[in-house]
Image (tube, rainbow, N blue to C red; front, top):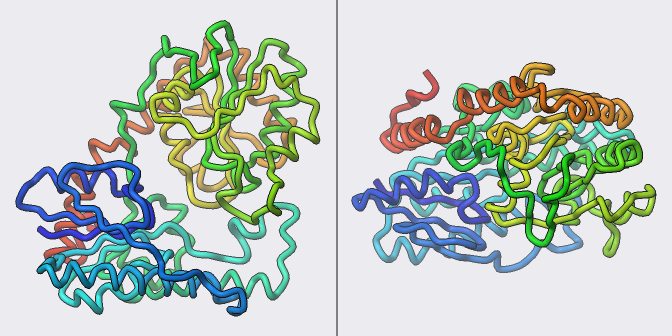
Length: 410
């Protein structure tokens, strides 16, 4: 089978499936992306860059669409050489929304298209109007609706779609749900596993002497992932518990939601707003996987918050490590965590209630082994890479062979 993967970043959600497909020498696997930070044996990397950026004068409703179109054009041009060299994919597996899949079927008309969908934008009832300062004008609502144009093109033209969670699938128009499978990427439970003796050293930070560690890990520091609420809760707890240390993993940037002015950041804002004992507040930045794993394993309590949006890998990875998780009671989280069974839930907006829930978990962490065990079991039952990978491979094979609906949907 000849497979072409499309994603701005390599290998992203396709890491495990691309690696597995490439293990068979009879398969030809090509991965087109803007950047590649690692190498997978047997996978041919095709690196390309958009030939220009979107123009400032473009109508602001259409800037996302223009960027996607430019990306689609650039991918098309990069793939021309593939075609000249005789590579004709049986299937194209593409991350939808950024545009690489928009025109590739014009170049490879016989190839099946399996799109990975993450989000369908709504002005009301999900992420965009969730936060208190979300002032939704008619102009905002119209712009958000228009952001779906590249996604709608993929929905219309793909042979099948894949989406990681039921909550994310619920955001898509009903008319398209008959050609989509809910199938999570999965996590490597042999890597993300509990270790009661995990070393409390993460990069340059040594907490070997610390008994209570509250952790928070996401890609960026932003309201979408409840960073301000977490910091307010952490500040209360640090004042109440003089031996508590707080570890924040992630970049000091906004990955999701409204960007801040250059030089400003939510980390700077929260540190300025709150009176922290900075000797007990540790910002690690992004960590290599071995150090990130140790943070999850050594955590006394792990906090996770999100608006109703795409669910973070970090939540599933934390649960897989048997972490004691206190999370926001928002829809994507409640698909995974049942309060008091495999974790604890608290009101996203009530940082005092969040702090109380964390304090309870800290006070009783030695007696909550059953919660940790249930957290791990949740992942083993529903999100284990070893179980989901064969389903991913079967889905790709079925779509490539034109078996629609695929077995995964039956």
